[in-house]
Amino acid sequence: MPRPSLLIVGCGDIGLRVLRLLGRRWRVFVLTSQAARVPGLRAMGAVPLVGNLDQPASLGRLAGLADHVLHLAPPPLQGEHDPRTRALLQALARGGRVRRLVYASTTGVYGDTGGARFDESRGVAPASARARRRVDAERAVRWFGRRTGAVVSILRIPGIYAGDREGGHPRERLQRGTPVLAEADDVYTNHIHADDLARACIAALVRGAPQRVVHASDDTELKMGAYFDLAADLCGLPRPPRITRAEAQERLSPMLMSFMSESRRLDNRRLKRELRLALRYPTVREGLLA
Image (cartoon, rainbow, N blue to C red; front, side, top):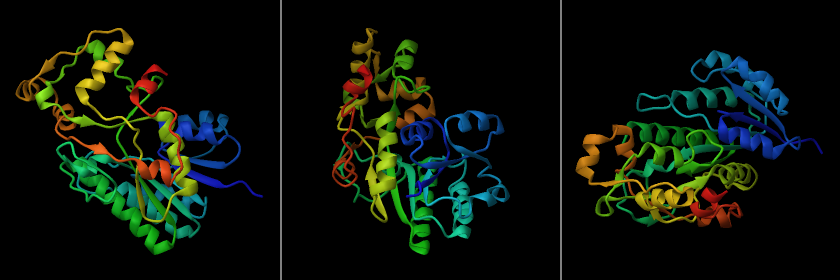
């Protein structure tokens, strides 16, 4: 039997973890905009292709290349739409080969739900341009699936962490002494270990249902302050100071405040039942200890 073929678009940390997991069992193509990465990707067993989602003319080689596509590339930093995803889908459509496409989205598309616990049937309500760009990308990949017959799956992903991921461990923030919200103002956050997310991507490529959204989240139900308190205890560091929301708005960056303004609890039963993923790190305690 020929090896399955996969195109990874946006091969950063998660894409590299997927590449390592698949090994030589799949024929993996990787789109990179950096020619300097080609030797390293080739050494890992991938077939690197140099192209840029911001330059659609550079994507011609993607047509008819692979049966499976894992789209991990983020939208641009400005605007209400995601032209990168649309450029990718136009290039893929010319080949007519794609049978399965998995898009890595974000749970930010829900906006603030006041700490409600919900599953994937909840409608989106993006509260920022960043989240609206993701909603635009989701709609584009769904339309691609309906138009081409490809099985399109969407993973909505919360905060990603791992000890070997750049900026992926709370230790760095704890060492800086960045405050968290007081209990009365605090928000629920959701998490997934980078290794479990890579495994979720592969499970979706193999078992994802058409037009299906899946929460790629672990079982943790903690508010943000409790998460950092736990991390501090495990790392032997002081717990972060607590401040009110009014104080936070004066002291913290708008980006950080945007994450402190949305509270959600995600139901992840589809991840475990439909994609049949057994989480190696079901809660952040196991993941932080690892």
